Amino acid sequence: MRKLLVGLIGAGIQRSLTPAMQEEEARHHGLALHYQLIDLDRSAEGATALPALLASARTMGFAGLNITFPCKQAVIPLVDGLSDEASAMGAVNTVVIGSDGRATGHNTDGSGWAWGFRRALPEARLDRVVLLGAGGAGSAIAHALLRLGTRRLVVVDSDAARAAALAEQLAARYGAERVESTANPAVALAGADGLVHATPTGMDKLPGLPLPEALLRAELWVSEIVYFPLETALLKAARRIGCATADGGHMAVGQAFGAFELFTGLQPDATRMDAHFRRLVTTPR
Image (cartoon, rainbow, N blue to C red; front, side):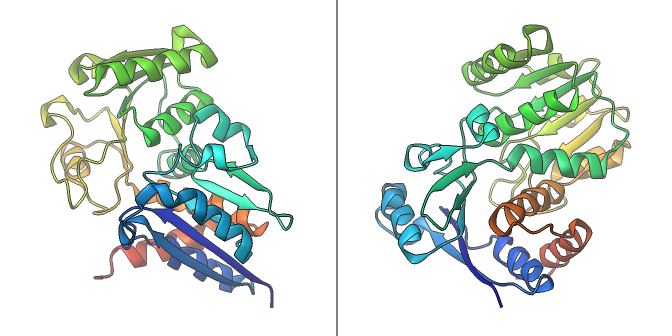
């Protein structure tokens, strides 16, 4: 039986469902895959341990690593090459290590979100879309939205400079007529077809709504990236109003789907992975 060793480097990752998803899908392919959590919160070194961890992974024969906060940018100088996706986004969430020890950085955030979005909201209009959150996840989703054909993307962030910087970067690649930024969600949502929420607000440890409920309307579709809990305050409000919605689980599965394929070279069963994820996320832990 083929064996693979992979893992996840990040801070505060003990509740991650990725090990269970990856290991279960591997079993269906006759593959013995061990997925190791490497939690930076358990070391006084924190993110400064990243170079040593990546070197150790090479030495120990890891096939790859997922990378999450706070290392998605810090890992870039430590890899030997970047995929086009990772280069465009300036962030890496998956590192594939070849048999020769060469490490290549990839990013499945945008493609993972797009996979889940098409699955959950296949008829969604993309004439004007509002992206709330200009951080790492938001940046990846912005690229995905524009590649899906969004005609006008409005980037909103409480940090106006960060929103403007992302909009400028996107405009240089996709055209200034397709991107704008603002710090005012009410202005952004006027006439919008959809809203993508890409901030941590709504997580178990940061509950609440990321914007006033009064700004939502039934014609708006809403895509969430938070999945702890799966039913966030934003989704509850949107569903009460009658919005079409996509929960954060779709992106979580899409990311895992892409990483599994990169690590193993095998085609995962998307429906099976999604069903397994939803069993995991609704089971008390």
